Image (cartoon, rainbow, N blue to C red; front, side, top):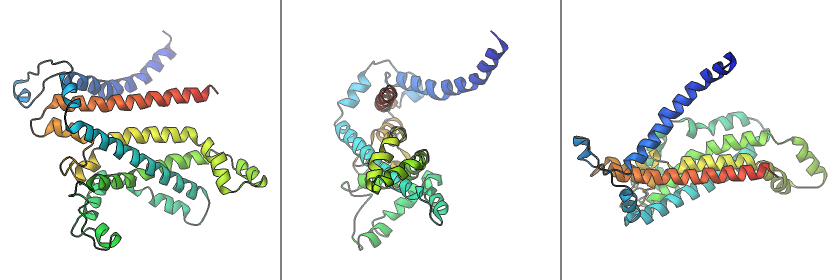
Length: 290
């Protein structure tokens, strides 16, 4: 091998080691745990018998699974739709030049920059049934149990998660808008196209690659969201705000500490994220072949 090739491998080695240690090993370990009967006693004895796909069968046949899977889908879809829509609207708004635009755009990044525990705790105070500002000022003093009523708890965590994800969408979409030539809009204006026509005929089509990446990353982040839900509701009351991510944690580290069952739920999440990732790669390759 030439010295140049050895130098290239030397630069590549730290990345490979990092990916193996922090990505491949945890995934493989999770797959192994999902096929073992790892319970509270296993933490003492160190023994976890191999049981094949029994954990997956137990998870899929659990009475809680359909409801939690539906809540996960609802949480993910509603969050993505509103995060992307609001982020795109703000990106288009800040793409125009006006006084204090840079300052306002910087302030929009605060939800993304704040520690998640601070943001989630703030939302917990805001949603408080007795003294929260949401009930006091937005709903005229109505006594709504946002975090204690099963009818509202999931929507409370969805609202908080939307707020947290808007800056991420704003940054990526704003960057994509900067790559669209201004001359296209000038030509469209000369041809008599209005703002909406230009948006649907120029902005959206040319923003499609960035939009696809934004939605994929948002999907992966949202489907595994744990912190905001756990801080606000811990998946309650009566599992009304659980998603597969929080349910996996609860099975693994609370109650009987059925680490095998929790790992099985985690592997389902991995498969779902992998499927959507493959769909994106297929769509991107098809787009490039046009």
